[in-house]
Image (cartoon, rainbow, N blue to C red; front, side):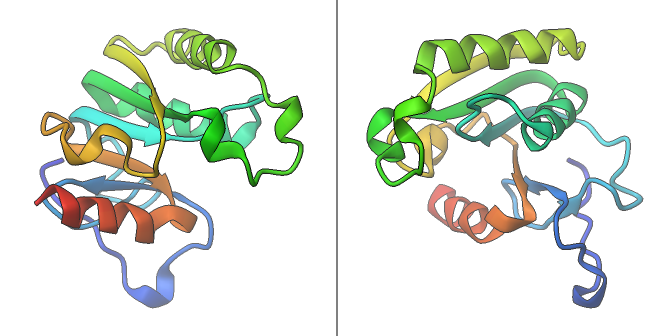
Length: 151
């Protein structure tokens, strides 16, 4: 992303998608001048079990923003141990295939990689090609921590 978009704290929406360039800064997807921006590569993560509107929104943003690479971290079973209804969560393979399918249906032309993650950072601390992290505002603190580890 060429510019970081940081609205004043008083204007921060409660639940929005956030693009976090690895160089620092924050871009809220719904706020100009961030709308219409692209990045060469983007990473996002989630359980992606029984896709709901929140999942679809993240995948839609990734599909439309990434030009070259989309990296999707999907938790391994050990990360899901504390989740309620963990026994009903689909296999990694099923979740991975669905994520790839939805991204393609959304018109994603970038290379898609789904990876099994064992911690919140996944491969991001070592993966230097990823330029942008896509999170919800609920996970912004974690994304900032990942960026600090990446420096």
